[in-house]
Image 1 (cartoon, rainbow, N blue to C red):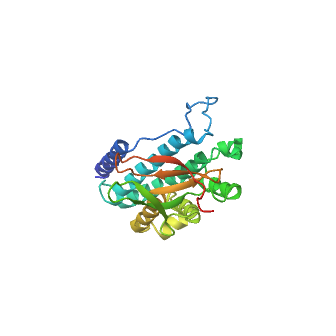
Image 2: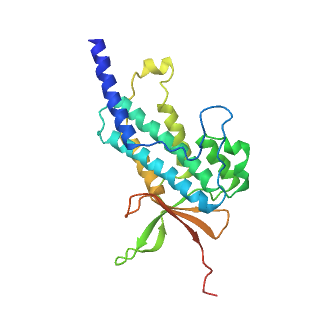
Image 3: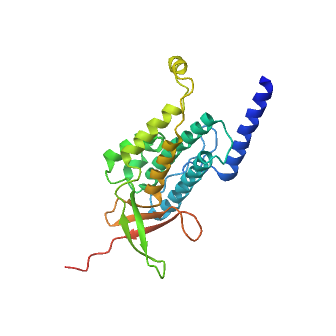
Length: 252
């Protein structure tokens, strides 16, 4: 009977993994390397015209990971409850890491990010903390497009002041994910064999992430230049970006 249960469980997990592979393709844009020591490594772009498409692909990866979370939380994939909960937090942690790398990519015009320390950094919290000291305005600014009801063309962007993933919350989420990705010590195990999973927490984090990234602006090293990013285009459903330059005021 035990062997049968094992095969049933393995079959369920295999179904989940196959579903995951069909909906998610891992993007290795940031590190085009082969898997052996001494392989040549791509250089991080410094021109905003080259930065933008790489940044777009990283945000596309975040979208696919969000989609996996929504499928799991929405019971579209058959998994034991605790495994589904842990899979959700695994994707949240990956999203934090991809987001931190996207910030690093977006600010490739800053010479300091091309040092060996920065280029080898992968820990999301360390990247965010380093950036806070280097450039306090590095974090994306969320906004909402106001469009012409007739032409559909954007008229202006209204700033979103709440309900999005802040920099401090990103650091909190990254640490929280670590709490759920380890089984814990023997005392914790014997005290609470299997904690009750709260999927509402995962849903809240996803909502704050998407509110931040749906439409956001990134301030570059030049005070008059920003990168504007749309997470989901109405036309093709893909990420799009535009390099925007602030025009001098006509009012003297």
